[in-house]
Length: 199
Image 1: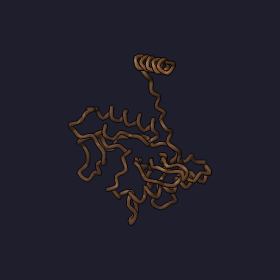
Image 2: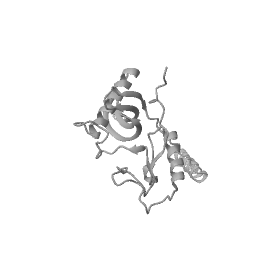
Image 3: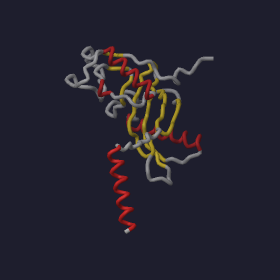
Image 4: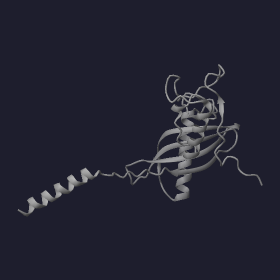
């Protein structure tokens, strides 16, 4: 039995180094300008891109750090080269997000509604399929605050799509650590308020 190759993140590689792109190459819609830092060698860019893909599972890549063109790209609404007309990239992202959320609701017994597409990255697979890493918002009818979801979808031009995952993005919990100085000032103020209340 063959292992499903679409489950894993694809190997990261440089398609074109900065300055060696063919004239007809589609440049990423988000890219570091030549005069912007950080100034990295192609090897450093490859290492950094690989780290970001592995750490975020393909969802959070800071393309503004890179000059080289990789096989991982940001979704560009102005580039409809990955879709079959009359569909556009915008309508495809909307459709894949909604279908992922529908599948999530069915599996989890929830009733989240699609709010909006936030961002997406894609990975060229080298066959007639494109892997999408989509971040979008969904909202439960009982909650006014939208939640972020992440969906991984393998889009095939002539076959049914594979909806690999759709998960709520974990919320980062922020803990405020007060300095001793602020903590002492707070204690003094509370002590003063108690003292005034007793009078």
